[in-house]
Every structure is written in C-alpha cells, then in structure tokens.
Length: 226
Image 1 (cartoon, rainbow, N blue to C red):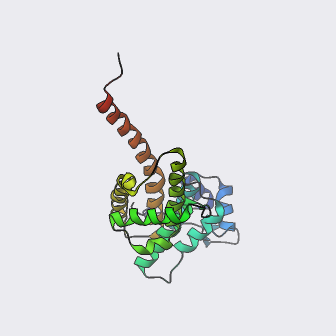
Image 2: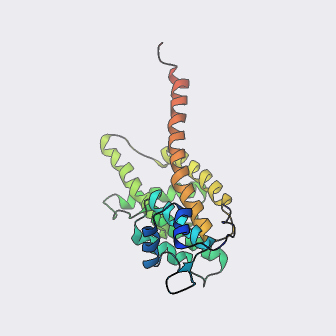
Image 3: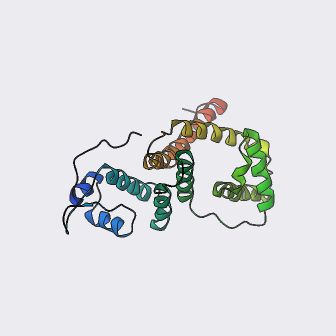
C-alpha cells in the first residue's frame, strides 16, 4: 500500500469527508487520543494533514472491517507511536499488536490444552516455525481451536497431525506471501495491509476453499443427474 500523497491542509470537516466518517467520530477519536491533534491555526481551528487522514482511514477499517473494539484500538495506537524502537522491531511490534487485536480474546485453557499444545507443536515443526511463537497470543488461539478438534474424538473422529498437515502447509504458504507483500514504510500502512490481508483476504480464502471443495466433489463423484 502506498502512503497518501501530500495534500493541502484539511479542516476537521474536510478530514471527516475525505475519510467518509461523521465529524462526531473524528472528534471522538481526538478526545480519546486515537487521532493526533491538528496544528492549531487559532483557538477554535486546527489544520490536519495526510497523516491524520491515513490514521483515520485505518481506524475506520479496524472498526468496520476488523470489528476491533475501541479499547483495543488504544493498544494499536500505542504501538504505532512507539518511536523508541528501531524500524524492524517497531514494525514487528505493530504487526503483533494488530494481529492480537484482530484475533480478540482467547478462551482459557481447557482439559485438552496439554494435548492441543503438543499437537500445535507438531504442526509448527512440520513447516519449521520458530519456537518463540509458543509465547505468542496466536499460539494460544491455535491451541484453543485444536482443543475443539481433539474433542471430536468423543464422536469417534480421531485426529492426528497428518490429518491437519495440509492446513498448516497452506497457512504457511499464504502467510509467507502476506509478509513478503508488506511494504517497509510507515507503520500505519503496515497495519492497514495487515487488516486487509487477515480480514478481507481471509474471507476470500474461506470462500475459495468452498469453491475448491465443490470442484473436487464434482471430480470425485461426478455431476448431479440432469
């Protein structure tokens, strides 16, 4: 994604129109510290620029597409404004914060957590993922889903890592593509790309899988009787 080009200063109303949000929403984000203050021209008027517009569009994307609660937006803004870290580590922090915010809270470990954790480890080893991921929120999310998968055994559906290998291989392929496509610029751009990749393209991946299953069902079983 390319950063928004430089433009003439915007009034608050112009900023709201450019981002296609109500003026009240802009004022709310300003009050909550989610949007930086503009440059004061008088006691009652401030100017805004392309950085405000990019941030506002990102906040809208997070709320409307990512369904991220306002409370978690503060964590993301803090990561965006972490000027102390060098660029690679800052970018990593922004992406980690964004991924956690999009994922939402993870259920507490259940009775199958230990087995699920071991299965997650087997899957991660299949594709050579870093052991440091075991401390990441995403690992806990995977473990939680695998607990549900393992619970199927009570229905006579045993699960082994070989059954799940195609899923982790596909996930690694898509994730590799997503990260390679990220730019090296402004963290706001990085976070915007993350939201589009995880949410919008994530939905595309879901429906493409269904379409693929329809195709392979036709190949295996033949077309329905005319």
